[in-house]
Amino acid sequence: MLRLLDVSKVYENGTQALAGINLRIDDGEFVFLVGSSASGKSTLLKILTSEVEMTSGRGMVNSFNLNRIKARDIPKLRRSLGVVFQDFRLIDKKTIFENVAFAMRAVGTPPRKIKKRVEYVLGLVGLKEKADHYPTQISGGEKQRVAIARALVNNPSMIIADEPTGNLDPRMSLDIMKLLVKINEQAGTTVLVVTHEHELVDKFEKRVVAIRDGRIVSDRTGGYYQNEVV
Amino acid sequence: MKWYNISYFIREAVSSIGKHRVMSLAAIGVIAACLLIMGSFMMVAVNVESMLQEIESQNEILAYVNDTMDDEEAAGLGDSIRAASKEITEVTYISKAEALETFREELGDDSDLLDGLEGDNPLRNRYCVKIKDLSKTQEVAEAIESVDGIADVSARSDVSDKIVQIRHLATLTCIIIVLVLLCVALFIISNTVNLALFNRREEIAIMKMIGANNSFVRSPFMIEGLILGIIGALLALVLQWILYTYIIKTTLADFALFELISFRSMFWYLLGLFVGMGALVGGIGSGFTIRKFLKV
Ligand SMILES: Nc1ncnc2c1ncn2[C@@H]1O[C@H](COP(=O)(O)OP(=O)(O)OP(=O)(O)O)[C@@H](O)[C@H]1O
Ligand SMILES: [Mg+2]
Image 1: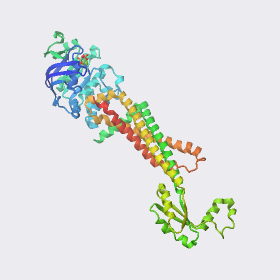
Image 2 (image 1 turned 180 degrees about the horizontal axis):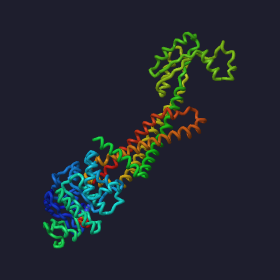
Image 3 (image 1 turned 90 degrees about the vertical axis):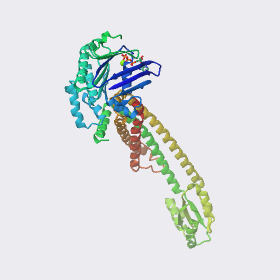
């Protein structure tokens, strides 16, 4: 779960990216975060992962207090979140299997358990057969599936995805979004997805939070993107 | 830390060296070059030192016994000479007959020049005195001269002063050059590591994003640096051996006034030094340089 109270962010160069954000997401929810370019979506996610410090306001993610988190606890916060990016961020020199496995190694999981779990999540995203391939040998949609598998592998309570379909064609985008919905429904993992794509959001009847110029301008469960003033 | 973590780090480090061959070769080359330069200088320094010791051991004080004393009296002066100064380490009595014999040997084929002198030996009974600290030569010589029965003393205090000077100069130069080389080595290596890490900053950022802690990210890099450092050190050792044994020894041995120290006698010392320095610079260097990439 996450809770943000009156959160603002002003970057060092004076850009105000967020202005008074209030947001509550409960465990098991599926939320779309929408808004035009430069509206502050990525900044909001970076505050959740503690990549960026908020200028004012209060916030908590899972059991972590964002205002008081110590540097050595940041890895723990990030392990409780599975993060997925627009550009996949896979390590090209590692196999698909290793890309997923090393998220588990980082947590100190014994190799025996790693093998089983990685095979399981790769099966979940439909990539069991490509485990020995390298990221350069698979398609964009497949890469994003690997990234989702990696985000899932440590059983996070929440998945955060920043425009996960931004680099994919519409068909693949729909598949990826369906995969995230499936994870949310089957494993109960909370999912927060940032996206630009109207048509995609409109295909699912989910909670949509719209943000403009660093403010939340609408937040409706079951709402459709095209009805919002963004 | 669990064994499977350590074995993972080592496998990771080894495979990473294979995947970044050019960068690894560059790092090995840089470390080997720095150690080779340092080692070459050290070999010169060691040889200079052994040369100085050689000269030093030849530099002795000769105390001549008064001719009025007979051989037996002269031979009994040893203890009073030894008592003259705390600096004295060795006192050897050389009778005039022995001195003549030595002289004869030195003359070799021309020893017949000394024929007939045995009965009326013009040489004096003498003591050969060695001291600890060459810079005290003059002082000790004077002390010995005041011993009863000593006629006069010959000491090349000018030579011993020179040796002391050369040693001071050599020590100073040695320290300065090693310090400068160390700085240069650290600078080049930290730049090499920096470049290598810059190419892999994305990888590091991804690890951090996934929730890896700093020591998990750092460990394989440090082991990688350690391995590269040790390989560089071994390479430098082989190159040093070839350079020293074949080039310097074959060309210089004929001209050198002193015997050069053999590489073999230096081997373990150099091995320890090179591997120690290589591992230190490689491991610590990469561990230190990675810090700024960990701030994600
Ligand atoms: N590191 C930074 N330093 C200064 N300004 C920044 C930084 N990151 C983002 N900004 C600014 O903050 C504002 C919000 O950026 P943000 O990346 O959060 O937008 P976004 O909604 O994710 O946009 P997009 O849809 O294009 O990804 C923009 O004006 C941007 O230029
Ligand atoms: Mg963005």
